[in-house]
Image (cartoon, rainbow, N blue to C red; front, side, top):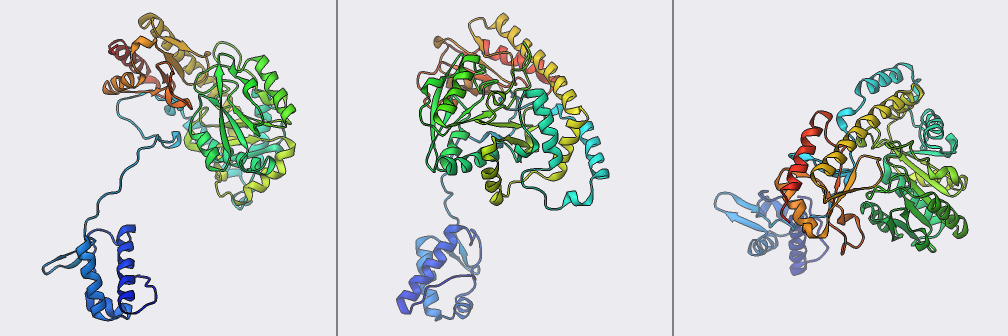
Length: 461
């Protein structure tokens, strides 16, 4: 047995043996049911007297750590299970649910462009030089950074070059790198502003990394910029606020850039679903207004699939070297084949075709949702602009509590999210649910929508 005893003699040695065995059981290194060696064998292995071992084992039997059974020797006794905490699951680890899944944050995964991805993968494996599979640039494959610079400039109005782009393994890693850079740029413990409401995982990550998260309210025109003060950065979703679905107004965009220039702060633009606008052309990225003050973040999580773990940062020139330095010790890395495949999809126009296909599909789904709400739930209001993959459905106060409404929907086999958990302070928030209308597969959407509306009409008030 691998037991580490502190030096000692007599009672001190016995106490050390008891402590080592006790900790081995508590930590799980000795699992319940494990049979211990005989006292003679254990004494020989540890180089102590058999009497010392016997006394220590008897004490642990008395304490309930070990149990003695006839002709079975000593075994580790069953241990009480530790208390199970139930934190809100991270969006990156939300488990599958039975029934109808209308949670937000997911595209239609059945729409993954399998044929195009396979064709691009074959092309990459056939044409890539052997050197492509060695240790690569930590900032991402140059082929992908070149393709992204062209695509983002054309589709999102982002002003950049390949040298200003860093490929990341998902949005969380991108945000983590930004926070590391801000620790050097503005000092550890600086404040970072977040929209309120927002996805709560990201302010929590910010605080875990040593910064202070401040929560700035959002109204129908987006972030209340006049509430910003001395924050080192403001994280915003200007094209389609998550989760309320509003767009940062032109006046607020100007005001936000003015704040950044005046205060020396930075803007982190999370353009998570900017390609999906249905009532007009997509609103261009804020980054184009101030490339020197905006850190732009994009991902494939909504356009293709979150499982790819592909994201990118577009950096102001002043942050290129600091962020490259931050990647030195970060082991999160997107495998090079996926990077080259995505570059190929951009270069051949397949990504554009996929996004157009999804935009048509999601526009139809949102239209059907709006028609169903207007026709069958006239007391409820669908808020936010016609964009993205989700919508917020608000109810009058007399409808009842949000928790009871969610409980009723879950009992009906329908899974959505309440709006209140996205707020920093949940009190006085109106009852509302966040509907991910892109989540179901295409052939199940009408059924899912019908079940949702029927369940809401039957909800107790």
